[in-house]
Length: 253
Image (cartoon, rainbow, N blue to C red; front, side):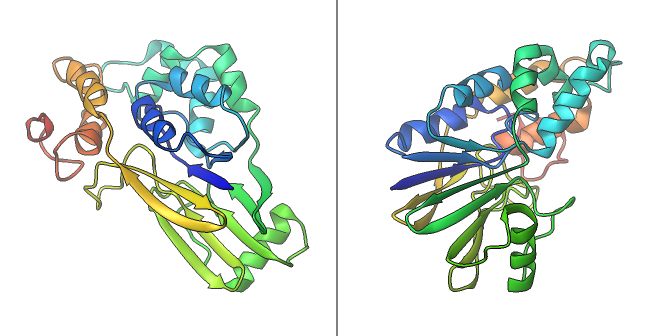
């Protein structure tokens, strides 16, 4: 059996489609949240997930932010210079899209190839990780029940850092990384994800077309509407800027 694990797609339909085309033979797909925000195609990403088969999906903190911003209505009257990608996302979503995000659970569970899997967007309210078997068992009991027998894996997103942590025999947690973008200390521009084939974990990276994201950011450079830091983030995530705070012209290639 092949399990495809993605997370933190952030309204990046080009990255998502590239992964799905490469791994079209998956049996189970799970996503650890953040379908929206910091990207330009939230509707398309939601629609793609809505139509996929055999999925286990949870919401992420950016999805909650989008929901709250949309329902508050603040995105309709944002002052120039304070406009963010979350407002851009809200302008493109509708009530049906928000309803789909709202029905997603905080956690999910499934079994495959002799492993029990628990999925959540993040371990705690920040960027913490599970560093001990005690913490693993405690988290599992709180979210998936007190049965701690057998092989167990936890899947998290949020940090955008691709990794596998082995805490002991049959006790592991993994993060597929972000399908969309890296953290400021990582200049890699590929889409990150994980496949688990017959129980074997494989960390993967794949190039995708970043031009649509860059072109949209360029449209805002000549206006005073978008916050400069939001555009600088895009120049780092999807352009050639080496940091997320370089002058805008450095990331325009």
